[in-house]
Length: 111
View 1 (tube, helix red, strand yellow):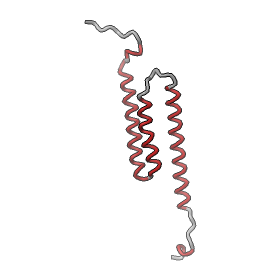
View 2 (tube, one colour):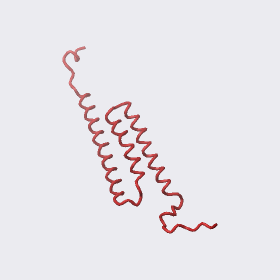
View 3 (cartoon, helix red, strand yellow):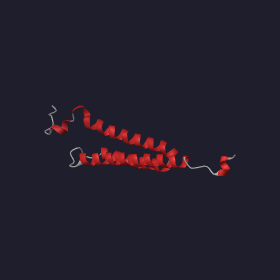
View 4 (cartoon, helix red, strand yellow):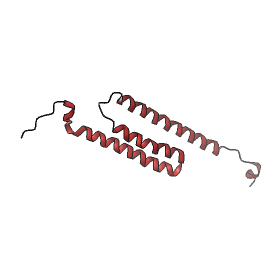
């Protein structure tokens, strides 16, 4: 019995590229979940946002590689995650800045 090469070049999958890519997406989703858990201990809302992104990242990695619009969907998701991270960072910094710079009352200043 001889094994003939597949008719379609994409089906050959030299070096198990699809398997490695799938594992990379899974590792990325697990990383999001781990970071979300750590952030959740400190801040509830940013931690929940990061935890919610983990299944989205994992599902993106499971999409078929030949699916039309896949690259656009991945790009949009990356941009959305980056924008959410930016907004969370600025709102957290702004809220910390506002609470730290509150003027002390007269009674606090004299004690």
